[in-house]
Image (tube, rainbow over all chains, first blue to last red; front, side, top):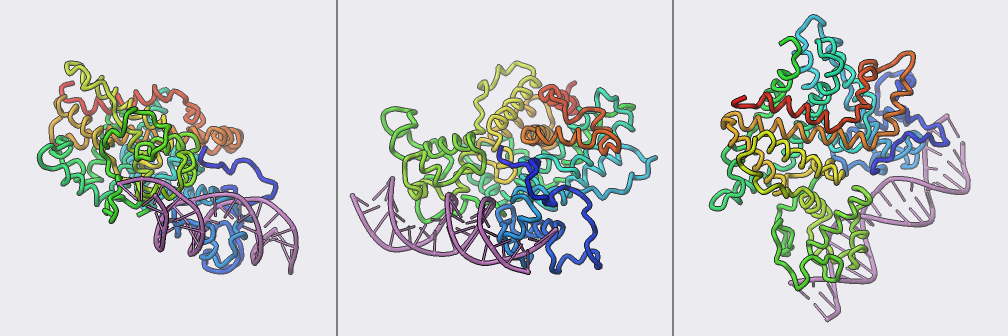
Length: 236
Length: 236
DNA sequence: ACCTGAACACCGTTCAAGT
DNA sequence: ACCTGAACACCGTTCAAGT
């Protein structure tokens, strides 16, 4: 409802599709020069998002950085929403060890994939809220595909496959969400702890366990993941 | 970075704190009449968000619905961000069976809490992206507290408590995210399936398992949850 | 095929002021 | 203590036009 999809083909043939896009001219990846292109736009959008967050991305600002007029962008792109979709997907590409070594423990393989997925999102924290309000781009689908394939090869029965995929996926998404909302909240996390610390403590259990101060993100992440993997394990 | 927190006390004593707020005049809950109040503002913001999504909430639109000038809002509220924070937290309150029956199976208790949590978010889908970009309000903290207390009472050792809480929490958050992004994506989900269906199918595993068409959300949710709970179980 | 500026209908928020 | 309008510095996008 909120997110306008770019699905509805518009009259003009905008180069909005997720595709390799023909290598332009001579120099391969010099993003800094003149002619506007989908790649330059997307790359610059990512820069802007990294630098100033979701609200920092503005069509005018984007055009400025690119040295073009605002309206030029609209030839390459449908929408501001289109820019978001493209930027999001571009940042979520999986450049994994190509197939790992095959023979390796599937558990290692999966943990690696999921940690990379999590790390990718954390590198661009704006991706997390975007992810929860837009459709899945091709890079996300690829990751799901790879996850499914690996689980399947590891012996998970077809009838259990969806639960397995979603459980792991959901866990990673949730862990990442939790992590990012903590990053933004560091200051009033402290406030919460102090404010309600003494007498009528409102959150005694949480305070006792120092839940909000448990900084061992990767450790906690791994432990929960192991729990899940243990449940999913086919052989043992 | 994106979210300005309302933490920094401003000069004027805005009634922005999360508090019961003194019952105003005679009629208790008739939200429709004249005088502006934090409660009316928040309730109307929620209406607006439900009706028109995140981008639909506008200070001017909000003021319109309330029959006041835009700037009047700013006496009660710091910011537009403040409105978001308040609306979010207000929608996440836990009205659970008050303590359940105590004697009951802790598993039932926890599943109930988590399903309620998930349902609450799904009732107001805009809450999900907001949740991933703002700090935790008191109602969220209360839910974490309750979850922790229940697990603790069920026999989870203190040293395992944080992992237990976060695993469950993350799982629920992730499941909800996944669910909402599918709701928005129904159309091009179909497109994906068809578009790449035949020859060079890009996502064979996903297609074989019909992952994107697995509509049994509650079933899948429960199964993954059971997996986790099995891993966390103290006694058995 | 690609880019542009002017114009429109919106935004959030400051400020100085009213009661 | 509560509410207001005018004004400012922005937005995204349509349109008609240029090359």
